[in-house]
Image 1 (tube, one colour):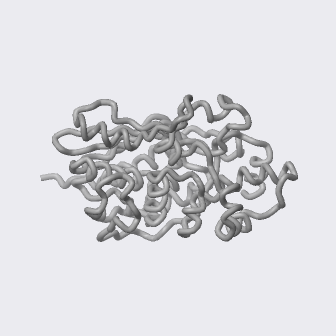
Image 2: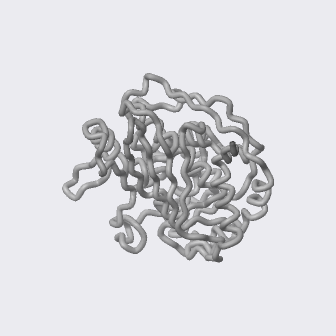
Image 3: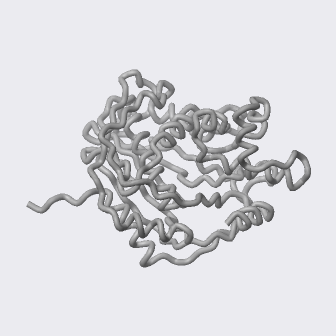
Length: 328
């Protein structure tokens, strides 16, 4: 009988697809170039293990704390900074730089800015906030009446009440706050990338499909796969189901030009067996979830391959474009 191919090859084949068929594009807000394809899908069955990619080590601590940040409805990076997770540092600093340009705040480097977030509660409350991002949209969607809508809680209750439902969906894409659709003073400086997910229960197994409109395949996607796979497991547990599949559907999926050598190094490696994941029985509701409730077992991966994050998207400003181009 023919041996089943490792599920990670879906990701590796997508890298090859982009290298072969990608169209060159330039980000308006930063001038950074990518190779891009449009409309792809990969899927992972949890019977094959937990899809934490193995051809380079994925930053697991970041996955845990970021998802906890989202699910708790937070939108200030201080929680992440206090726990040593710095994957979101660029975005509030982007806003702060605009204030520097207008001479409204003292000039400081990103490193000084993050140190101040860590040490100064008042400063963090004012400048560490990222409005209209995932935690807020998932748990505190701003309705026109002034109330907030907890989409995640609603989704869980809907799945418990009606496992055959077709409407168990959470959306992060609110046009009122995005790009030139927004009032200038309300426009988000962070681009909502993984913008919608839907759950379905079939034969006692809960599956989750993510639609990601824009995806950094090398740095972001391994992280996104792990995060939403973990979310699938959490939602399955609290709705008394087994985890089924995580399906990852892409709009624009791209490789940054400065990641090409790193991608080629990753493609030279062979996948290792996926790890296993255990979740504590203390997690009975969404709000019970904490990073310490998760145990990752038997994760063996090839070494980390480092690459520079490109904080693209969101409302484009001339000052941020100059800053990124100078940095690169």
